[in-house]
Amino acid sequence: MDLKTLTYLVVGASFALYFGIALYTTARSTGDFYVAGKGVHPVVNGMATAADWMSAASFISMAGLIAFLGYGGSVYLMGWTGGYVLLAMLLAPYLRKYGKFTVPEFIGDRYYSKAARLVAVVCLIFISFTYVAGQMRGVGIVFSRFMEVSVETGLIVGMGIVFVYAVLGGMKGITYTQVAQYVVLISAYTVPAVFIAFNLTGNPVPQVAMGSELTSGGYMLDRLNTLVTDLGFAAYTDGNKTTIDIFCITLVLMAGTAGLPHVIVRFFTVPKVRDARSSTGWALVFIALLYTVAPAVGAMARYNLTTTIQNGDVGVATANLEYEQRPEWFKRWEKTGLLAFQDKNGDGRIQYYNDKNPQFVEKASAWGWKGNELTVNNDIMVLANPEIANLPNWVIALVAAGGIAAALSTAAGLLLVISSSISHDLMKGALTPNITEKQELTAGRLAAAVAILIAGYLGWNPPAFVAQVVAFAFGLAAASLFPAILMGIFSRTVTREGAIAGMLTGLIFTMGYILYFKGIFIAPLAADVPANWMLGISPEGIGSVGMLLNFLVAFAVSKMTAAPPRDVQELIETIRLPAGAGSAHSH
Image (cartoon, rainbow, N blue to C red; front, side, top):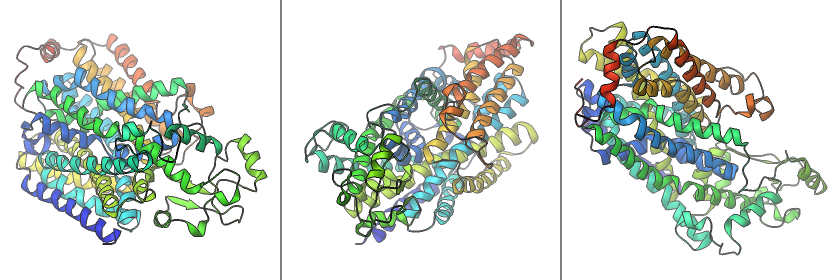
């Protein structure tokens, strides 16, 4: 069976499974729609959280980042896993004990202000739409390659699928759909990694194979370092970021993880407070199955790509792949526009090297090279790796299903958070408090439908590649919601005025910095290079400064305004007290 037909069958079967689950678990009440009736088992919730979390950025783009950044890409692994420790220790059990539906609802009650709730809704919408842009872009990339359609067509199909199971099933449908998607995506990620690790090193364990000896001789990382440095790139095992930027990006990813609304809301779905912390532990276990494999996948992908293009000593003309002899996978990815060749010196061979390295450019010129001729999008590395390694078609088809599952699972969770913030926090909580439960449920579904359309546009016109877009969302979460939630739980002195001023300061500063260098809906105002960054901090890490400003402004304004009412201060103490933590307040 040819690859295209097999891919349609495998992906189609996964879609049928998702649709079936969505129809079987259709939400009948707002409780089902927002928090799955608060009856999800911790293990199931942990698996659903892992699927919700391991988005297109984790599945498609993270290993691509590691492939090209090498050691420097470790910040994403440290930040994204470390954030779950913060979530388990500082936020999840306390928010579950509070017993409400959404993050803005907690902020509105804790800061005794509808205005604070509305500001939290604004922050949430900015964060979620920035994040969902990366997921929809991932959907388009997977469809454009494996379904052999345009990115735009892939986006439309993905939007339709998310519409069915997010709008019909709500959180209840999404939870059980995400369990199925986790099984698909983890299989799709680890099975090819095992194949490739065994082919390259004879060791089927990817985590070990990365440091093992190649069957062709030499240790893998040593050989990879030699390959890339011979082509003018930085050594794979060397860091390529400054210490301050590594610190800031890691901090942003950790705090952003703990402040992401679509992650936090998952801990509102379990029966008891202790189940919230247990769910976090299970989520880390399920996430680790992918995250410990990602560095090996990145290294193997970089090795396979480089040796395919440069099959011999650098500088020997015949060692460069002839364009007319390029393999089939190369031709298929060229059609997507995510892999491109430009024959700058007219020799009909592909020169792939770092033409930004002035020392190496001199050598390259002596060989007749006139610039790097291969453009590779980071986001294709995981998807293309099985094809580059000549794995069986069924493995390639499985990867396609996994990539789609990863993107759709997170997109659905984000869109539900957006819809619940509009229907529950904006309409029910502020604008139309007297609407019935049925009207609120209808409003939530309509809001989800509109959000899907906007997400589709952002996926068609994203500001950067998938993992970078997602990193911006973490910066916004770290700078706006995380401090407000943390201070709301552990400080009795922060006032509504302080919280509102802090959230707005963090959001505006961080979004402004990202817009300045990246441009979302507008053209960038300055080149995104270290020389232009404030204190050497990249747009991916600037949320750490926004977070600090949030804390400082919140405490400063609180000092100048009236203290919170006594009942609010007592509420804060009650949330933190372990006594009676076995049961949550009813809504």
